[in-house]
Amino acid sequence: MSPRVFRDETATTWYDIGFPVSAYIFPHETLLQDVRFDDTYIHLHMTDGRRLSVPLQWIPTLYHAAPSEREKYEIGPNRKMVIWDPDKCAINDELRIDDYLIARPRPSNGRS
Image 1 (tube, one colour):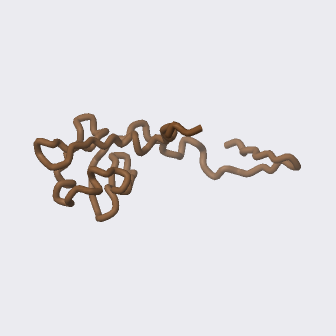
Image 2 (cartoon, rainbow, N blue to C red):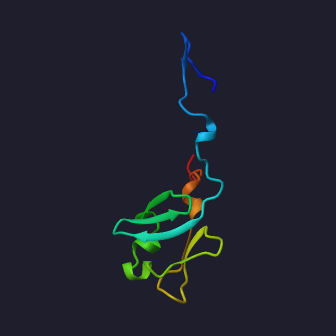
Image 3 (tube, rainbow, N blue to C red):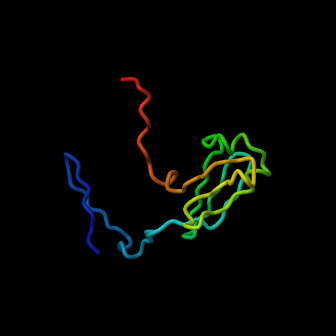
């Protein structure tokens, strides 16, 4: 294993890295396994062991819905979405996990 070099303007410092890159796990694909709710968050459990908690306030349709209606979701066939079917509940929405895993630029508000 080769040491990493971190440089600043005055000196070079060498630090040993304790593990090779092959010892780390980098998920290739993120898929939904389970969904849970509490009073504040929707908790998305992924097949790779990660947990993603999204504030319900970020999703107005869920935030304003009754807890019993939130529970009437389906996990999409590609396991990348949580879907509320308006024919089965009072919510009409889809939550895509990639929207909460990948940073996106803020939308322009028309101000310069």
